[in-house]
Image (cartoon, rainbow, N blue to C red; front, side, top):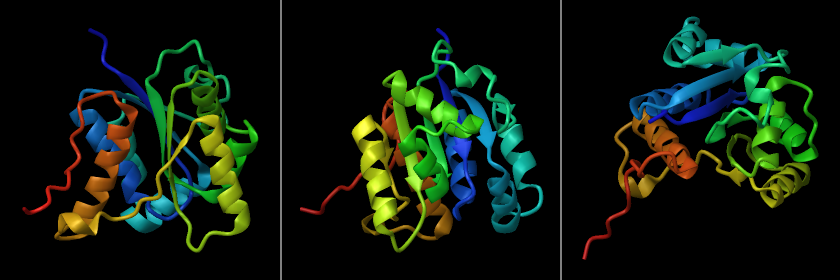
Length: 190
């Protein structure tokens, strides 16, 4: 059986650790990962996760593509992928996706997911939100994207930031439905 294949887009919003956690989680499930990293994300990865973070991310994935390579395989709906996660998703990338502005490989790959009716999970990162942000979120949702701000599940009692980041990554991967859910679940005391 062919393993699932997922696109991981990384844009320049804060929260670069999310991209590494999503990649690790997908790889642990034997999912092939195609990576596309925006120029702003390269800087954010280095500033938030250290100078070798981009190399660590590339080492985890199956394939990585240049942002300006709009002819890459993931730019076509004929390439069978299970969906895409943008982690983190900047408001610039959200705006481009919501408007169908396929000006780079990250936004083009996202548009492909929408046109092919595949899952597109956007871990949108900004606070507070402007009306433009909210409208872009609405537009992307109306087209079929899942807007998933990386909000901690405090009710699960995370011990540290790593627990929070890993839980958010697991929830995002669970939304793709490529594997039975693995994220921690709420179990109320009775």
